[in-house]
Image (cartoon, rainbow, N blue to C red; front, top):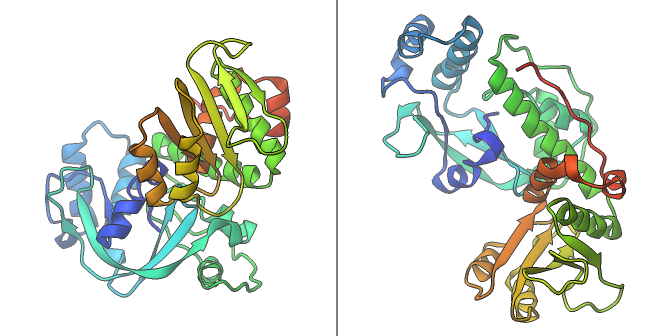
Length: 328
C-alpha cells in the first residue's frame, strides 16, 4: 500500500493518470539505479539536518518504492473522500517526473474497475490499513479482505498481526498518519449515527462556528433541515440554509439543482451529504448563482475536529472525541 499524500489529496489524479508516486526530493536523480547506501548518501547530502531516524525511515521507503516494488505486484491506495480502497497492478518502473506538483517519482499502474468500500472491511483490516508509513506491506489476509470487499463478497479471515516494519519513523510523519487514521475512525462512527443525530450534529457544528441554529420541524421541509444565522431571531445576514442527507449513496445534480432552486434572495446554501456527491452535482454547485457549499463526510469530520473544543455539551454527547497529546 502507498498513501496518496496527506489526506489522500493525490488519490483522484493517480486514478485518472494510472500511476502512483512519492515526493521525496533527490534533485531528479535516477534512484532506480542506486543501491540503498547510494540512496542514503544522496539523501543526507540534500538533507544534512535530518535526524538519524528520519534518514533511516525515508531511505527505507524510497528504496522500497524504487526497488522492492516490481511489475505485476498488487498496489493499494485509499481515497478518503469516497472511502474506497483502490486496487491495481504495478505496470512500470520508477521514473523521475517533471510535474510541477510535489510528486518527484512515479510508477505506472493498471487500476481494477472495482474498489473496496471501507465499510465492508473487517475491523482488523481497518486497523492494519491505518499504518503510519507512506509505503508499507499489506498482509495476505488483509488483501483477501480487500479483494472480497471489492467483488462484493465476504470471507472470514483472522488477522496475522502487524506488518514487519522499521520502528524508526520521523515524528512528523507518524503524527500526520495518526491524524489521518483518526479521521477515518471518526467517519466510521458518524456512519453509525441515525439521520436525526446527524442533523443535530450539523447544527452543533455551525453553532460552534458562531452561528445561532435551529432545526426545522419534521415533515416536508423544502430542503431546509437546519437554519443558521448570526442572530437568534434569524433576521440578520448571512443566513445559511442547510440540507442534510445521511445515506451512503452519492447525491446527484438533480438534488443539488432542486436545493438551489429553493433558496431565497440573500440565502447561503450548505448541502451536507455523508455519501458524497457526483461530479455532476459538484458542477451544479459550482455554477450556482448563489453562494453554495457542498460538504461530504470527509470535509464534515475535518471541520468538526477543528471546532470540537468550542462545541456544546449536547453536540459532544452525539459524537464525543478524545484528544491525543503529542510531544512538541
